[in-house]
Image 1: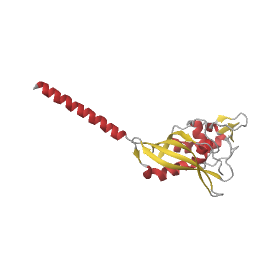
Image 2 (image 1 turned 180 degrees about the vertical axis):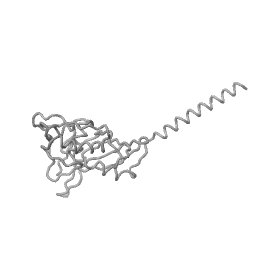
Image 3 (image 1 turned 30 degrees about the horizontal axis):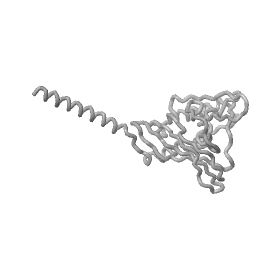
Image 4 (image 1 turned 90 degrees about the vertical axis):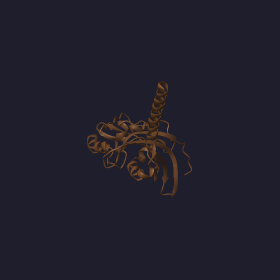
Length: 217
């Protein structure tokens, strides 16, 4: 009788542990929230299309996308989020830039620019904007006339209570000539829920795919 009680107790504990683990697995399963947040996230990310499409605009990206404070600074300056002028004083740009950086990337974001030494096209996207003796310097290439990068949210997964992973595709189009969109690559952009006016902050960005340029234009 005692042995039977011990066996039943052991079975009960096993079932309890198994149920607990199944509950964790179920709660940890990503939830598709694309329709719920697509409009809001698209509005948040679209100012950065020109920056994000730059490494594979007319070729295949060969460098790993590095997400750090240099990147965050360049992303904000090289976008319509703030209005800056090349050759503008770095101190002036920093005042305009920092509040937007904290809005998009959180309170830990820091304004950082690499020193400009001599003019050359820098293929490291995080150093697209540099500090040239206290003035803003742009060291990237240019898009062809009327070519316009446009991003598209294809999926948003909620991976935990406040964390989200966005699959974001970049395309090139030329509205002037009425050309169709040409797929250039895909990013995974990691968001965290925030009480700011955007609803989220960007915590990480990874380039997961880029394609060779198809010169069909």
